Image 1: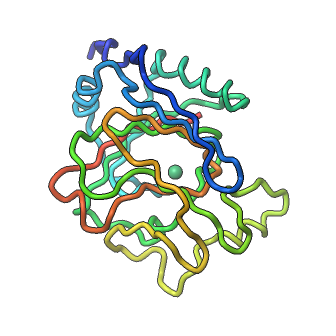
Image 2: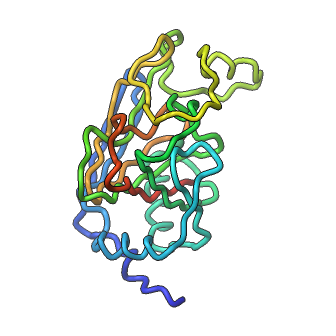
Length: 224
Ligand SMILES: [Fe+2]
């Protein structure tokens, strides 16, 4: 298949905003009107067969092994802004549907291990309730990110703490507040908005329960 690479073109007049969220000065970047032709991009993604995630993602997910030159160059620029050395770049199609059950563990905040920066492009023109990317604070420690510890036992402090089996299949219902975590920020999704955050921030895909049954919630994720 020959790819029409014009569908990856960035919009030169996109609106970049820096946000400092939470108590720990976490930088989140949002860029509205990110792609020049988001509908063509979405059409391109639709041609690719996609399947159920076997990892944590609550829905369908596919890693694309295509090196998106325009997006890669952009990611390098953002890495400079965060003052990080970009790691290996990874690209994923993510598709959430309220009709699929998920493993209960997916409802809890997570970090993206091994990922320095996460980029999420929201591709829905439709809205279905409050939806976006939620950020969480660990109540006991006040941490909004999971630090790197040499002594791994410390990671257990942030594990899922529940009487219910985390591997049960349930309706997706991301937490807002539990004894352990509280949501302190939501980047609301918007068509053609890109959100950027550090992979070690506690976060999750946020939707309201029982939504997204008539249409899927589509995002394109990039990591480095
Ligand atoms: Fe994540």
